[in-house]
Image (cartoon, rainbow, N blue to C red):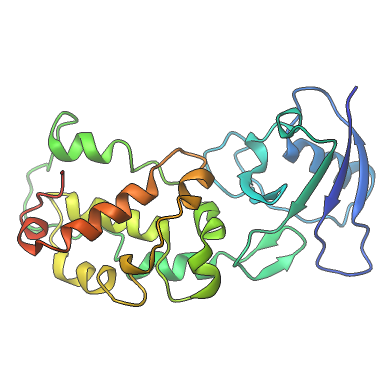
Amino acid sequence: MPSFTFRIGRSQPESDKIFRVNVEPRMTVLDGLFLIQREQDSSLSFRCSCRVGMCGTCAMMINWQPRLACQTRLVTLKSDTIVVEPLNHMPVLKDLVVSLEPFFNQWRKVRPAMHAKDKNSKKLAIVPPDSEFGQQAAKKWDCITCGACYAACSITGSNSRYLGPAAINKGLLRLLDPRDSFVDERLAVLNAEKDGVWRCHTQFNCVAACPKGINLTDSIVRLKRAMANMDKIHSKELVT
């Protein structure tokens, strides 16, 4: 049975930080944390819900990379020492539990809800999967708002006003959507010189961190190019 040393970031200085755990070969980091909580330190705090990589609540820094604890098998880390810490750029509530308030504050700025062009229409607005929007959005709408990209981004660490990759990706989806009408309102936020898409340094850290494999940097670069031709944005022709 494999044995791992867990080094865990704790919010209380007097709390135990190092634990030795014997695990089954297929166990994940989340499984290891549950073992520690159950058998060694019941005060250890972390967040989880679905345990199948769908909710994003167990995102944390694992060996200095933002990952989902429920999807990270211990044997894949190629180390017998596992360093587990709370997500970067987020206020720590306790141990591995962070407040996602900074992430969602930026998320709300892009007006993520759909604002229909015809609010009084009774006709079902269908976007066929093989349409231009359907094909482009299919690779970008799986965001689970886990905050991993926000924690991986070097710009959010130095500029708390920067929208962050997930919010910009959501803004792109709404700008692409032919059913949505809030174009100018979103552009005012996304095109901001200091806090919008122009702050991205194209380092691809967000792409590496995204547990759903969304190419967030592509979304940001696409928007930068589109800003050169606002007519295309208003006509929903952002597919190039």
